[in-house]
Length: 211
Image (tube, rainbow, N blue to C red; front, side, top):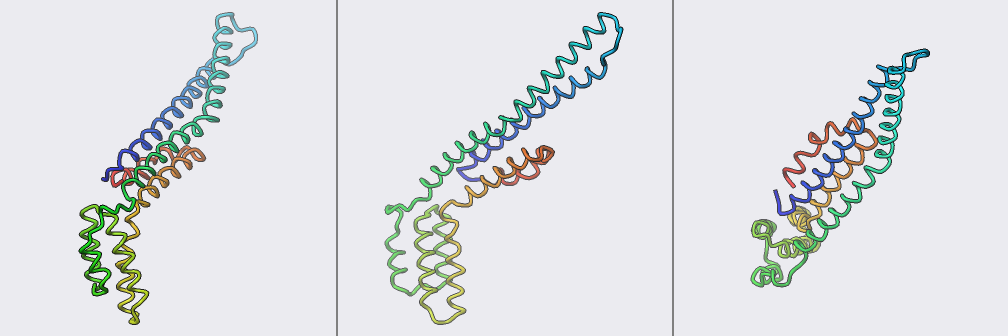
């Protein structure tokens, strides 16, 4: 769980609230249909029955209209809310992972510039910077390892440097936006096939937990 977990939780709350609103409107239609079926139109029925039948027919029309109106606007409205949350997340990620001159370790930078670091040493330094939350140094070390890979002649050694350089890809926070977008995609699929909403927690719980 990271500092950005609240953004995933907010999307989760929006989604569950959307599904609950949809289910309530759908249940209202089913309830109105049940009452309508209990009082079908009958010729020559007594006035009391006819009044109940007319009321049931009107209630069904109203419930269906409300459901149709809700279905036309609900997901679009909620997508705008999700987009606003994502914009906040994107800014927070940028602020957290942006390169910061104050985070540059000059001693480590000197070692990088010396050209003496092995792939294993790069790996250790990247792990230490990651543990310290120093994304600037992770990115610098990863780029330096990539540069070393491009310069060495031995293919096995170059591969070792490139594997280490790959660890720097996660130092821009992109994985948080990708995880958020995955949840957004599941939400969109629930609109196209609402039965999928019943599996929302199954499909996204781990994402929220590990966000």
